[in-house]
Image (cartoon, rainbow, N blue to C red; front, side):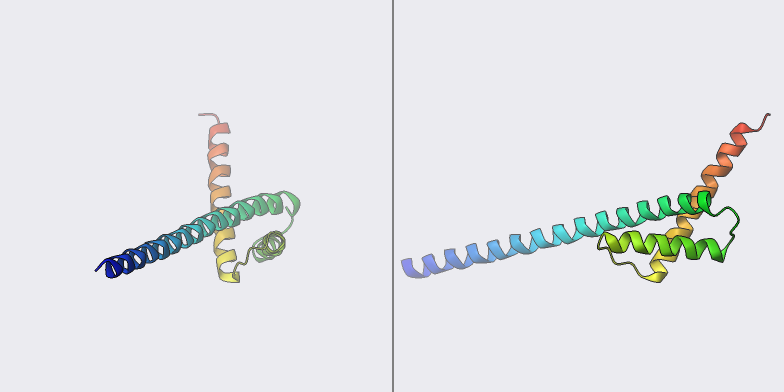
Amino acid sequence: MDILSNYLTQIMLMILLAFFGWLGVQAKNLYKKYVTTEIKQAVCRTVVRTVEQLYKDLHGEEKLHKAMGRASKILEEKGIHISEYELVSMIEAAVNEFNNNFNKNEEKALPA
């Protein structure tokens, strides 16, 4: 009976160890996903401001392609993969944010 109890204790410890190992990997993956998304968003916001500043004579699709090229290069250098669909979505969201902030600042500057 002692031998059986000893084996059961060891099996339970191995199961517990495997569970905590799996839990650690899941936490790491979740953290990595969150941080990577934050980096992608920050890069897209920065690129949108840069393109707006540097390419004032370009509009629409031309600006989008400039922003996509710059953002792709920066993210690639950081070792972060992003699909074209996700990149376009994040750039468009950054443009929307940029335009909303720009419009708010213009409204504040206008006399009442």
